[in-house]
Each structure stands twice: as C-alpha cells, then as structure tokens.
Image (cartoon, rainbow over all chains, first blue to last red; front, side, top):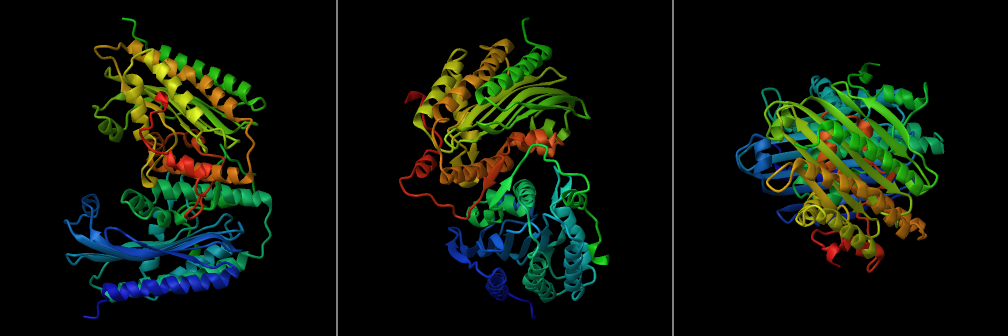
Length: 300
Length: 300
C-alpha cells in the first residue's frame, strides 16, 4: 500500500510551515518571523512563529506534532475507545494592518490513534473588515478549483461546512465570507488515504497564493482613522468567535495546550462599543449585510 | 411570614440601579448614563445603562427581570424539574480610564421557580491593572464587615468561592484580587429568606462606597503610555475570562439573552501580544505575582 505514514505527513507540514513563512516574509517586505521551539511535557512539541511587519500587523504560523494518551473526556467526545494518539498540523492567523485587507486563517491537520484510526482535517476562511466582491469571488473560485482537482463534491460540501462552523451564534452573523472546513477525512470506497492527503497538501499549498492576491488587491487602498476603528470592532467579533465558539481553541484551552500558541490567533488590538452603530448605506453596513450563510461566491 | 416576595426584591434592585447610577455620575463628574429599555420576547425585560465619562472609560449598569419557561437544558443543569422561572438582578462592570484605578464588577440576583424553589446569588470582585496593597486590604476588610454583620461565616466562605470562581484556568492566574461570590442562598435553620435578602441588599449598597474609595485613592496618580498599554493587555485577560470561563456570560450567550447587555462587560479596547513580557522587579511583575488564590487581604 502507498498509504502516507505519519513521518511523511509531518515532514510535509514542517516544510509547508517553512514555505509559508518564507512567502509571507516576501509578501510583507520588512517583517521577519521569530521562532519559539517548545516541547509538550506529555510528548512532542512544536515551532511557533510570529511576525510583526509593515503589512501584517500580527501574524502567527504554528507547526506542532504532539502525542500521548488521549484524555478520556476527548476520546469519549470523539467516540473512540481509550487510546494513545498522535496529531500534527499547521495553523495560521494573520491580522493585517490595512483594514481593507482581510484577516485570514488556515489549518491543516492529521490525527491518528494507536488502534489504527486516523483522519485529516482542515480549512481556510477569510474575515474581511470590508467585504469586496472581487476578493470573495476570487477566493471561493480558487478554493473550488483546488477541491475540484480531487473530488467535485469537496468544494460544495466543505464550503457549507465552513459557513456552519465559522458562525458567531450569539451575533447571528458569520465570521466572514467563509471558505472551506472539513474534518474526519479517511479512506473510503472512492478515496485512498493518499488521495485525502493530496487534497490537504493542495489546500496548504494554496495559502500563500491566496493571501498574496488578497493583499495585492487591497494594500494600495488608503484608510482613515474611522476605518481603522471599524477594523478594531470587527476584530472584537473575531475574539468573540475564537473564545466562545471555536472548537479548536476551546479544546486547546481545556486540555493544557501551549496557551501562547493557541492564542496567537488573537488580534493585536480590539474594541467593543455598546450598541456600536454604523451609517445606513455605508460600506460597513454592506459588510454586515453580507455576513450570512449560503452566499454562492464561486458562481458569481 | 415576613418572607420578601419577588415584587419587593425587584423593587429593591430597581432602586439600587438608580442609586448606583446616581452615585457613579457624581463620582465621574462629567459622564451621564444612557438608558436602553428592552423587552424579552419570552417575558420580562430590563434597563441597560451605559456611561462613558472622564474617569469611567466604559461602564454598564444593567437591571433585568425576566420570566418564562426554563429551558430543559438549564433546569437539568440546575437539578430542577421542568418549571417556569423568574429572575431579577443588577449587574455592573466598570472599566476606568486611569490604569491605576481597578476594574470592578458586581452582580446581585434572585431566582425563583414556579414550584416554590428560590435562591439569591451575587458577588463583587476587583481587577486591578496594578495591585496596590492598600486597595486590596480596604476592599477585603470592607467586604468582611458587610458579611460579618449577617453571619461570620459569609466572608471566609464567599471569599474563597470568589478566588475559585474568578480564575482564568488556562492562564493559571486569578482575574484580580478576588472579592466575594455566592450562589443558591436560601432559607435554612439559621437564616430566613429575609436574612439572606438583607445580606444581598448590603452587598449591593456597598458598591458605590467601595468604588468611590478605590477611585479616590488612585485617580490622582499620573500614568504613562506604557502603563496604558499594560492596561490594554490586562483587559485582554478580562475578555478571556468573560468569554471562556464566566458561567453567567456563557449562560447568556447560549440562551439567546440580550447580547449587548451581556457584553457590556467587555472593555472598550484590549490588546494581545504574543509572549507579552514584563520587566523583572517591575510593578507589572509584582501584580502578576499577586494574581493567585488564597491571599488573606482582610487580615493584613
């Protein structure tokens, strides 16, 4: 069998982190990544890399590969018998300086147990402070191309999954324009383990191309104090999603994960104003109006 | 029986909100409260009042009295048979402008079911950006006096409860210098319902005196950009506690509460920096060192 083993998958993720960091340094122009290597007392460790640049106000690109006994609470939640586990992946969140450039998040991951069960998961989603149709259309068309190369069912399924996952329930609004989200991809009748891995690789490899385009399309737009203020408020919503609803963040905070690596996703600065209001027919109002599920950007 | 009924309790809380708002406007000097009256579709409503002043950068004083059928998920969690419920209370969070003045939070509440079960709950806790011993000692001694007037067991019990409740588990630090927290106070062999109510009244009535003292002791201290920056980072921790661990906030967000009233507790502005470091032997480091459970401030 040609099934990829954990060593191959981990090596790909480490290389992916290297390539993404190199690509983002080039994109930013002045910022460079600072790395912290860390070890997990229970087994494994990671490389957390952070950047503060001229275009990326605060960004984190984290690689980890951890192992040990799976806490019973988690094995139960995952519907698994008691087992050891191994998990590896790359996680990214970038908060840009210019409010016309969106926040971007990506995660690709692999999980396996000592009793032969495994799966891939991941996703990319984009959170604009101001929604521009050309960005949303480019982003979703690109994700659809990546998916279609592997399975024409991937994009529609994983796009809907992202709409449902990146949803701020208490605000009744999506975190942004969505993207793709998937979990528990294992071999089945029509996909080998390597097929699944190849899809995850292409998702990871798409990241720099996607963000470069989103930066290039918007970096030249000037911004006002008022637009920066709006960005701080949107970042507040990002905080609300991550701390209240994001399963990955909650999982990390409740299982003694490395806090600084988990909370690399937090914005550098955020604001909350009681009953924050926006002007009628403003770009801010238009953005709020588009923070809903089910917009078919790829077909526009 | 002289047991207080919900009408009396609700009237006290409404009056308490009025008196606290008047006291805080006087304390601030320029800010005035803006009120939103709101109704809850399922029954009841409230009065949310917010202030932006010269000393209070952002503050909220909320009164509510709501009723309806208790969602099954909650009645189960509370170990109650299916029932209608009524709940009323006052909640406050104040974020001061001067980082030498602490954040303060208070909540007093009453809950009853249609099948005769009821209880009081509440608490006050203080979150300094810089811990000053004289503030902490005054605050805890004052709370002890309030408790001792009713039951010498209140302060030690409710102080420990606050240490455990206002704890940021993923940071392994307390939210601040604690205070008191209590829940499910009902009549027992040594306390009537009115006894419990009288304690809750005194806790509520203590609020303005306590905060006035904490403001007066610190408002004159000048502050630098660097100290303001530290304040923003401490507010980040406040956000983490409220969104990840605070049961009241989670309860509200998951039960379709009035979002703007629940999130009045959020700071106006907060910051996150990866691996944020403070100087050795600095006031910031001293503050971090004191964010632990079990400090007996009242005996100092």
